[in-house]
Amino acid sequence: MRASKDIAKRLRYDRFPRPDLFRRLYLVVGAAAAVAGLAAWLLFTGAFRQRQYLPGPVSQNHATFGDRCEKCHDQFHTVSNKACLECHTARVHSEFEVDTPRCRDCHVEHRAAAVFLSVSNRTCIECHAQLTSKRQPQALVQTTIRSFAAHPQFAALREGHSDRAAVRFNHKIHLTSDKIARDDKLSCAKCHQPERDGKYMQPILFETHCKRCHEQKPPNPIGGIEAPHKAPDAVHDGLASQLVVIAVQNPEAIFVGRESTLPGVPPRPPVSEARSLRTFQDEWLNKLETALYKPFEDTAPLLERNKYCFLCHLEDGERSAGELPKVKETKIPRRWLPRGEFSHRKHDMVACKTCHDHVETSVLTSDVNLPKRELCQRCHADDTHETAGTSCMLCHLYHDTSKTPDLRITKAKDISLDVLTGH
Image (cartoon, rainbow, N blue to C red; front, side, top):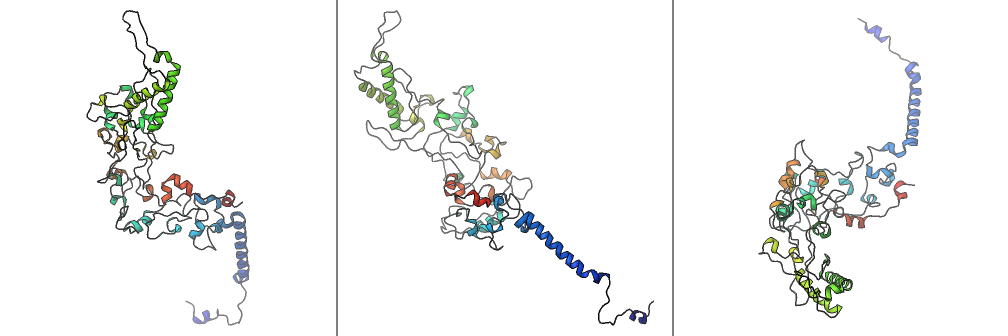
């Protein structure tokens, strides 16, 4: 055990401490650290420029100018809407929204390379958990949505909604009728083909999907006349020109009868007694258009019904004698969920009948054969790892113009490539 006298001998009473190894190297180590730091900064500045200050990776959308912080930031302040609008057009969510959030409130940069456009449910629910708008109480959308489990039924399937397309169509007949030959049996994929991007279905066209079974060839002089699938005035002109052609090419077959002395071969009178091309044209135009525009007979057996224009189309108002009919615009919906996004390609492994299970029993045009919300929730379930996802962004886009591709193109802002790349 050491005595206090021995310990006291170690104390130094001189004014300046005596030099030792640590104190001799103190300034050297500090100077070396400062030089090393400066050298590292110069090295990173030369190699990475402003990228050395990034708190995380730049999203793929902004990769072209990711090393130019001044493109978005003003002296490292939070990004303003003005900086975003230098490249992007001003697009709002709805004209009825009370407040428009700032771009940075939803789009957070420097998180990962591909998540810039992914907006969390929390951001959406901040408004939609208790939605207020300038149009309340007649809101166009549900005012309280906190999760997909609590999502209301899709608007097209709610009570009072129906398909208002002005056309007669019966899915059941086309899919189950025994009057269609076995080789011609129809299936969903025979008519409904996805667009190139795989999202929605291509429009149904008469020439592509219907003409094979529903050729518009009413009784005519010698055959070969077909009504174009167009408006009545265009049909009139098309038939008139075809009648002139067959009259000029086959005058004997139309205006001259056939006498026969052969047994069992009866003589044939002329197809037309007309003495002029114009009279023949008017005569047969009247016959053709009478057949084409015969009113639809809903009570007649299927194979005896009118097979021409008004089998499918609806007449718009009444017409006087000799007047061409007016056909209602069909207005077949291209998209059933205008406020939601959907991709058929992502559901390729699911059979059509799984989602559209009422099609084979659908006999009315007014039937809406969409899957109900409950069916979607079987795969898109909340609070489980075995889910196809329940993010609001899976189906909904914030910006109005993003929902309509044509409108999005017209709203696009022209930007020089040099501006983006900084050259």
